[in-house]
Length: 120
Image (tube, rainbow, N blue to C red; front, side):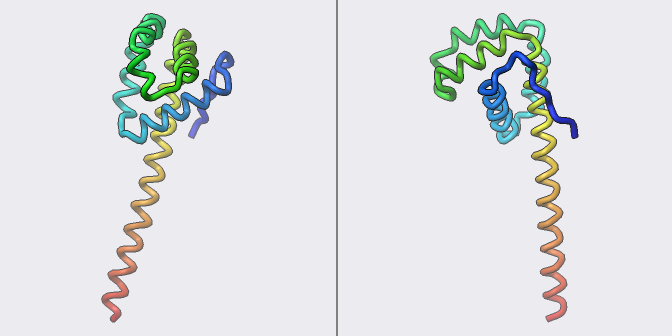
């Protein structure tokens, strides 16, 4: 699995914030819709970052003012959307792999329980 390299212009705080946001998106099961949305918004991302100013009061329920400003500044660069989409995709792959491993473990435990019942 490839590691998503952050663009040079992003600060460590912005990188951490985008990772947390990607975790949230993947955790809610919105990875695919989020990636499609981000890829379709790439040509107009600067306008979108300016529209964020309008929605600031509502979006501040999820982010602190400092976090909101960091996201808004990062989204002024077109490359940020690609980075964020790649980050969501990478974290979604990790989550799916963990789920497959957990399911395989659970299935093995159930088989072992069935075999024990047959023996007794």
